[in-house]
Image (cartoon, rainbow, N blue to C red):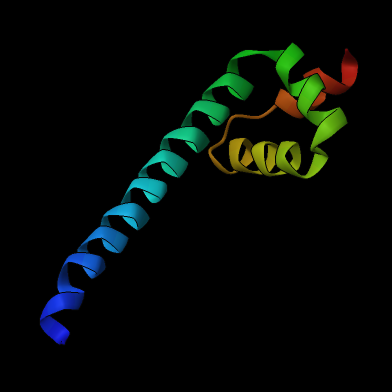
Length: 74
């Protein structure tokens, strides 16, 4: 019986890995888009303010200051 479960386990593992990979690339794309476009950050601040806060904290942690201040000035 354990032998018949092997293909199912491989299929589930493959699915989990694909979801993880898509999630990583999606997060990277979102970070890049938010880093480049102030207009996109404004849209995100209206719909998902917690995501924008994470972006601000990560940029400040990586010593890229003034992003938050520039957005607040505008």
